[in-house]
Image 1 (tube, rainbow, N blue to C red):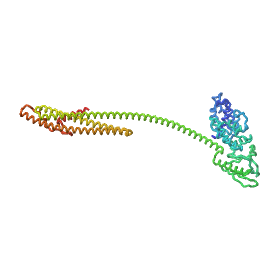
Image 2: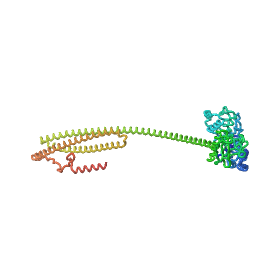
Image 3: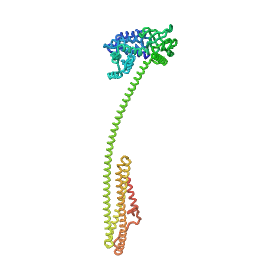
Length: 585
């Protein structure tokens, strides 16, 4: 019912559009009344004028749109339609309403009757959307059918050239453009009007009247048993036979169902090419004109019975549905392809943006890396400058120590000279005592020098350890700078080695100074002993000179560098002072 309703709506749309004279999409109520009455008459539906008045009671004077008329049309006409009306009469009524307004005035090679049939075929093959059009694929299908019916050859190149003339925004042809295309003879050159009309009629019978096959054959009577020529017309569920092909005098029908069958018979009674159609209550013997016609009829009837068993529609309707489904599928695939292309385009644009972002980040990273390299080089230069400064300072300290050692050596020579002079001269005893006091002061000075050397050595070691830790931290900070810092580390290790060598040299010099100090101390003791001897002699003879007694006999502290120049109490006092300074720092 749904398919029948769709086919009826197409013809009604043509009629409604024809009544819309100003193309506003609206028709007056009086015209709709006439249209509704005519539709009810041809469709054999009871007409209800009261329902029409009730439906448009609020719009007695104004026009009614197609959308406003559709609810009434569906409810009171189309839903009540049964498959018992004459489809040709229905189509002719709608055709009559629209032909004068739309059919071109230019002369055509086809009659108005043929134009009507083309119009009905258009409604059958057109798309199920409004305004109605027939797409190029269906135009090609129809033109091929007409060409085959005319016995001509199909010119595919000519049709492809014709398709090129379509406008870019045009999806197909209207019914009147299709009639003009067929009527102008563009695809039927060399064919007369009668041949074209016969081809249109044949295609009309097949597509619209569901005529699967037709032709003259002999039929055996049931009562008289005589053979009579009849015009047979095969449809999806019936075979009708007429006196002639004008279909005016119908003689009977052969009702087909899934229980019918067709069989070939041998020649008999002087008749050839016989076959038998068996139905539920009757059997029909038929004679074809030749074996080819016989085989074609048997095959056609057998295919019709098979379709009835399957409940399938006629082949041309099934083929039309498959073509529509194929177009929908191709359109869906095209839409899906366009959607995928858009997605790919969007993804590509997003990827380009991501690449641009990555490029900017790489440029920023390169800039930061260059800045870090600049800072690293600056830091390296500063470290080298600081290291050079430290080396210069160490060199200066070494020179100062050498000068001090040279000075102490000179002082020692002077002291020895004074000791020798003391041995020679009694009068120089006071000077010898003064030299002894000076020697003790020198001893204190050397001791302080040793302590300072130890502090400087400890400070140097701490600084070297700090440099070493900084070097390790710099190595651990980034693996990427490991190779670049390797040279700096080697240089620092060389500097450290040189500093260690300098430290060892200082240690050696300190030991030598200690040895010299021991020598001076021994000489001092010898001078003291000699001074004591002189003191005894002077005391014995004069009793005037009071010699300075040596210091406390308490045991001296022994350090890594020899005997200490201070007592245990002094050491504890110094240690207390040192801890106090450590705490405050």
